[in-house]
Image 1 (cartoon, rainbow, N blue to C red):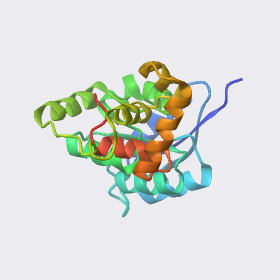
Image 2: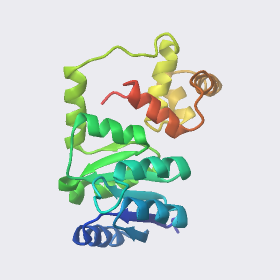
Image 3: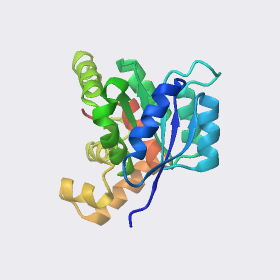
Image 4: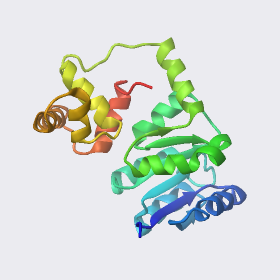
Length: 217
């Protein structure tokens, strides 16, 4: 029997929240262990229940902590919990801020019926997820304002390739296969990269990759 997937849902609109809960619990193996209507309550629920995934609305105006601030707190306190942002808002800057805060995915509420389950499955594989809407927004921004990488004096070209792959959720073995190098070489590169950048987790690596535009969409 597959392991039960535990979820926390946070949205300040009860109707929306209950709709999401109903959708998720219709999926075998998914269990919503807590609901919240403010960012503060979401952080507390995550700390108390240690879910696999926390689905947070970006805008929760009833409290002092919105979805972005809650994501930062969760990423710091419970780094193994994967955060998925669910929102009506979309912009290049907002997507970047959310990913840098530690979220692993971003789904528009208008896309939720079609993409929410796929997003959860992708996050469970330790990969990033964007709906088509978000991918197009980021790609447009990438094409409009290309910027030179700020890592060229710190990382080698091969190390930059490896950071990009690791940030997308690739394992050392998958990196080795894709770059046609040995597993030991891939492991050595990864250790050197983490040491050079003074990073301590995959989430740190993802944030670094997003900040330095090393993830191509």
